[in-house]
Structures are given as C-alpha cells and as structure tokens.
Length: 400
Image (cartoon, rainbow, N blue to C red; front, side):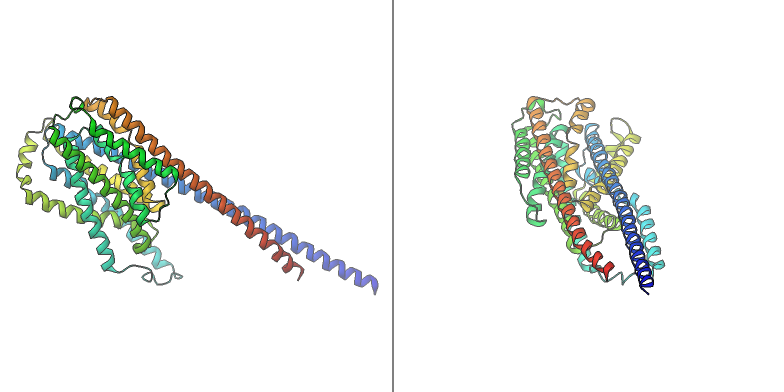
C-alpha cells in the first residue's frame, strides 16, 4: 500500500511538473510572439512617419518654388495663385473612393463589429468642422499668395518658419501642450529669426518691389503662418474631440472636404475680384509659353495635395506640432534652391535668420526625443510591474 501511494504521489508530481513546464513554455512562446508583433508594429509605424515626412518636405519645397516661378515669369493674379493651392484635391478622389469601398467591404464581412455609427459624430458637427477650417484655410492661402508675390522665396520661407512658434502657442491652449525650457527656447529663436528679416536692406530684395509692398508681403506671410499654426491645432483638436476615428479615410475626409470648401471660397474671390478676366492674357504673355503656364499651375496643385496628405497624416499619427516641425525641417532647402534657380542673394541677415531657425527646430526635436524616451521608460516600468504581479498569481493557480 505504501509503495502504491508513493507511485501515485510521484505521478502527481510528474504531472504537475509537466503542466508547469507546459505553462512556462506557452508563456515564453506568447512573449516571443508579442515581441515580434511589437517590432513589426513599430517598423510599420516608423515607415509611415518617414513616408508622411517625405511627402511634406517634397510637396512643400516643390510647391513654393513653382509658386514663385509663376510670379517670376509673368503671373500677376493673387487669386489664381490661391485657387491653385487648393483646387488639386480632385486628383485624390479615386484613391478616396477606393479606401471607402474597401472599408465598407471589410465591415460587411465582419460579423463581430458593433454598430459602426455608435461612435461617429453628427453630420452637423462634421460640416461645422470642415466648413470652418476650410474658410480659414482659404484666407491663409490668399495671404501666402500675397506674401510670395512680394517677397523673395528665401525671405518668404524663413518667415514661414514662425508657424512652428504659433502652432506651439495655439497647441498650449487647444491641445494641452506643456511648455518646457526647450520648447520655449525654440519659440524665442524662431521669433528672433523672423524679426531679423524686417531689417533687411533693399539691395537683397530680388523681387524689385517697393518697401511698402515688402512690408505688406511680410505682414501677410506672418499672418498666414499664424493662421496655419491655428489650423493645425484645430485639426488635431477635431480628430480628438469630434471625428474620433483612427483610419486613413478620416484623414482623406479632412483633406477633401476642407479643400472643397476652401476652393469654392477662393473661386468666389477670383470671380468677384475680376482677376479672372485677365487669365487668358496672362497665359499668352507668360515668358516661357502657354504650355509651361498650364504645367506650372498643374504641378503647383499636385504638389500642394502631396503636402496636405503628409501633413494631416503626421497630425493623425503624432501631433500638429510635430507635423509643423517637419515642415520647418525643409527650411534650409528652399532658400538654397532659390539662390540657384532665382539668383537670390543670401546676405548676412538671411544667413543668421536661417541658423536661428534651424537651431529652434533642433531644440524642438530634442524635446520630442526626451518625451519619447520618457514614454518608453514609463511603458517598460509598467510592463515589469504587471509581470511581477502576474507571476505569483500563476504560481497559485498551478498549486491549486
């Protein structure tokens, strides 16, 4: 009898050991799979960020240079230059409808989805968001057109760098951004960078405009930069508070509907101002030909839409301030290209302004790096604490 009991106890211990080993093996396999999934998600995430950032940099630089080319070769219509910044959104429609149809098919085939309309905002709220942001965007594009008409590209671009400071200011009130020493340093540097350009002498002004028009261009560009910073913060707020959808279709909705509103508003401005009457003459007198006139305006429209996709994508993935920072990253590129293509002068004030603007950008990016490092550390500590709590519970379950 004693031997039989010992054999039974030995079998029980063996079974418990097997169960413990099997459980530990499953936990290890699950952990490896989770780590692999996390790595794949991070890879896809950083790839998306790189893709969106590339769209922002290429789109913005190309559109700015082509916009200046329009004025350099005989373009005179500020409203046409405004309309063309916005009117390219129809080229996105095929892709938009493809995404929409794919999403509907996925929902139809998924029987476990809870009512898809439960978390969607009302049509009235969406219309209010798209119309209000669209109208602000129309005004911003007009101010940018005036600024680009009267200012050299290098000066225009350097003033536009102030949009990062304005965005941070609006994000403080609208998006709960916390001001840190590095963010404040960035704002101060960008403010000084833009302010220096007020003292630029006339000899460095390659556009041959009067001092009065130069001041008008400066004020319009600064106002447009402030407005753009506001639009980015409002877009981020809309995604968080109103739209509440985390997919690419939501981004496309934002781009297309606000562009539609802004385009209609600027078309009204084009016809109301009477500038549309001179479009045919402007095309005929364009220095590099009618075909070049059409191609220039067409590529301006396309490149601005490329920029819009990248910008809204970065807002969706991270924040409006990060999207603006990537936009400012292209700061040194455009002035150098302007020197090469438009023979603009890079005097001492512009050089100092550029250095300060780049310094301000680096200060902001370093703060982003610190924030990301702190978030990773907090997540790691949370994971370790959860693991420590879960291990004793597993041991109790095994013994019981």
